[in-house]
Length: 90
Length: 207
Image 1 (tube, rainbow over the protein chains, first blue to last red):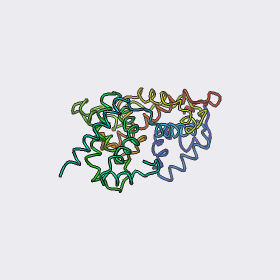
Image 2 (tube, one colour):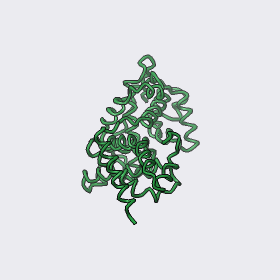
Image 3 (tube, rainbow over the protein chains, first blue to last red):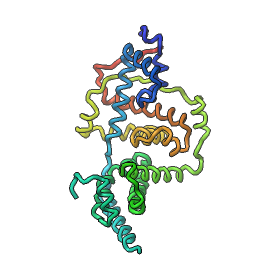
Image 4 (cartoon, each protein chain N blue to C red):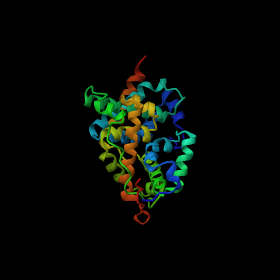
């Protein structure tokens, strides 16, 4: 399989164990430089990092579920009732 | 209520006795709270209970809300803890399992290597705009084990720190990191198999 200069400094396997820290931006700067050097010579690792970032941003953006209308009506009625009780407190 | 009224303004108005402001805060956040609860609990009735508890708790505690954090962060924290309470009740008292101890000690199964590696056909914001990925995302999330799903939701979706996630789930930070990596890799794999452009597919390096 493909071997090149960059792979001598850090292997894909090692990169995998540092993936969280790299994606979260919490990796030590010296290791970060090594990580990036590896990626310039290893397209698959670069694509995996991109994919993971895209995965996280998709999930962050999604609020997919609408409240069932009958539940929403009950929820708002319960809030009104609790509000009324609290306003009635001295 | 104008859409550009800030949450902070709505909180002030609600605390001054304006019920419409409270209702607007609820309307703005109910989908987000319900989605969080459903993703964590995968049970409609339990999720509805969490939504109701969260907003009733908001009514109770809004006067004590301090504006150091955003209202949304504050509310989502209440919702997260309400959902975790349901999970703890379901599980009984086994908070730290043998499995978690082995995982932290590095005796768990090895990290699965990425298999399907390809650029996505479209950027996330384009996928979101077309609204076609909703079911795909939820199906992928549902295929994760609960222990991986919860860590991903708290850390990556809700934006809790590793430490906060560990505290919320009664895990060590090492457990959280291992689970987060597995969750991210598993979701990446599943989404890329559907969203990846086969023409750009790359073979993983083996060495």
